[in-house]
Each structure stands twice: as structure tokens, then as C-alpha cells.
Image 1 (tube, helix red, strand yellow):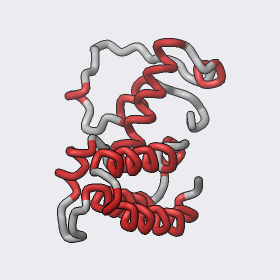
Image 2 (cartoon, rainbow, N blue to C red):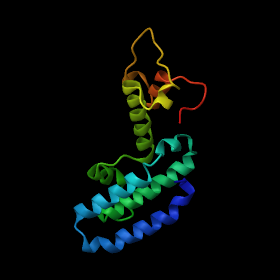
Image 3 (cartoon, helix red, strand yellow):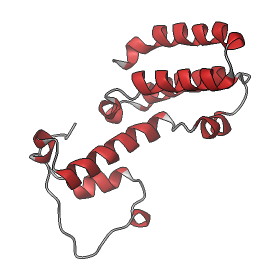
Length: 151
């Protein structure tokens, strides 16, 4: 789903959750909101990796609004605690997690073949850890080399 096609859908979903919220218990609303996020924002979200920051911020605003609706929080409330209570990651964290988990899967299982054939592991004189890298997406760059973008 393209990022520019999301706003109308999200407004509808948010409105629907707002009207249904009084009739549902908080666990049901939280589960419904989480399934919406997983099905719409996580679908092919690794393709969002190189989107301009303005588009990522727009997606983040949509997710923030949905999170506030799910827990019936005011618009002025900070979303960090809400995300923690819902066990959600922010958009850029979700994208990064998806890329890292896909990379790990390809490196450990050699599946799917079409991705495994595109990557090669580089050896290094010293072992790098997460603390050596400033940003965890650096790990993907360190582990994967190819002549074209992986995703």
C-alpha cells in the first residue's frame, strides 16, 4: 500500500474505532488497533526504508493518532508511554526491525533463495557488535553487499 493512499483509510479506521470504542472493552480495541497496524503498516514496510523523512513522519502521525484512539488518550498526550503499553514500535523502528529480521532470516536459513543469491557475508578482522554501530541499519550494510538495493 502506497503511503499517499493511507490517509483516507486511516481517517476512516480512526473514526470507526472512535465510534465503536464505547461499546468494546479496552483489550478488544487494543487488539483491533494492533491488527490494523500490523496488516496495513507492516505489509511491505521494508520498502518504506528510503522514503523521505516527511513521508515517514506522516505515517508516524497516523500511527500516533490510532494509538491514542485505541487507549482513549487526549490528542495532547505523548505517545511514548502509549506505544509501550500497546507493545508497538514507531514507524522507523518497525521498518528497521523488519529489515533486520529479514536479513537474519536470509543469513541463517538461506531462504528465500532469491534474496540469498543477492547477498554475501563479508569477513572482518574484528568482530563488530551492536555497540560498535551508531545505527542498527549499519549492521545490514556491514553484513550484506550487493550491486543493487536488496529490497
